Image (cartoon, rainbow, N blue to C red; front, side, top):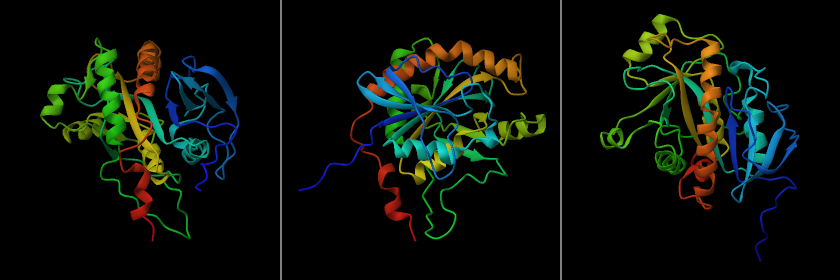
Length: 283
């Protein structure tokens, strides 16, 4: 007789990482904060665990609740390990980004990206493999297609006044949306930003690819929601820290509304391959 999978006293099936300005766990019911110990040290903050429309959810603010941790110093491995230890199988990751294509992607719009380009150079927290057993996980398609589909369909329904990329028209054309991940905490030079724009990439941020890669190694589904706060070096809303923080504060209601409706619509059983990736990755 098969035994049921052990669940620790505190557990969750879905997780989300809060980004700049998105630290409000107010959408939870019966929320409590717990400390999770990991082999990589402490996560960015205490983990908030609670219920959202009948689903058990865990929340970690990636920069700490007071935004004290710069992007290159986030303990990404501890954050993902903590989620895995709680039983999380899917992670949604809202994040602040700048638009690299301000003619078509504007502030206060959302982008559910499907690709990444990595411009980080010094992060040692990009993998759980540091010797001994080595895993080489496939990463051609870094975003879980099932989770991304749920987010897109829900966003179009519950946020009718917010442009969410890809729009249905963009999807029909097969348009790809790429997140460029830079080291941070500085913003891009004008030359760098012009290069990214000329390559046709969509948005620029400082965190998501590291999370996505570790989630792939941990067999956790990952999808991010890019919240456009500025136009990077272009246009009438160029990037500043104040601009990013203000835009995120103004967008928190939309983010929470979307999460509140996305989470109960996530299928309980996964039909994607994210949970089987190590079957083909270990030497």
